[in-house]
Image (tube, rainbow, N blue to C red; front, side):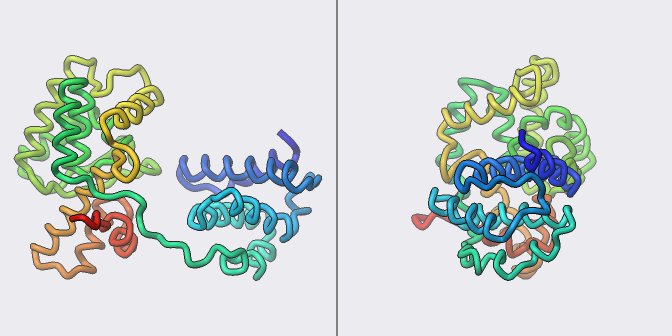
Length: 295
């Protein structure tokens, strides 16, 4: 790794954020440095030597590769973050490096995935139950509770806690393991009877697998198995495993609307249930609220 790449990696780490945010920022820094040398033949050793034209060249190359504007907006946010961490605020805020000047404005924030249909979900679940009951149990919890993939894989650690909460007639449970940024979140239980049945089933499976639903020795191998099996079950493209969470989000929005909340309130409350925070209601509407045109 070159001197520039080492410095950018250090700055990317120092800028903070969740584990995933820092990890993605480091990957971007490494790619940025590689492209400076390979594509632009730029031979600099320090961040203080970076010029606006270097960053403009990087963006042009990435656009030519077919990288979406939305992805490049995220990459530029990471670049600006690193520049600010290095004390290069003036360059980070340069007019030449805003999204409009770089040709990145106007990108849609609409989600690229759709909520899974009841028919598709039923087919996937039936096949999963035959192939791997633990995978099926995790998929079912994801759909019924709006869990992310990693939350579903690690849900075995919370099964008894959630069951106890339902036995107390609690309407909300806390998701602790596998959450984004390691931040616990509370989520509403939309169908207590269905969730209770799914938890009982998951507990039976976990007891036969040393307390795990996905029978792998560590999280990395469990996640790899989850994604590969999900693809084989037909959860790919617009209907990736996240489509289960999308379907739950739409159920939650309808639930809050039926309770008499206005649309803005329903979106804000669903955003909090999903772990995004109440200020991301519009984001939830754009990303999770999409439906197949055929619906």
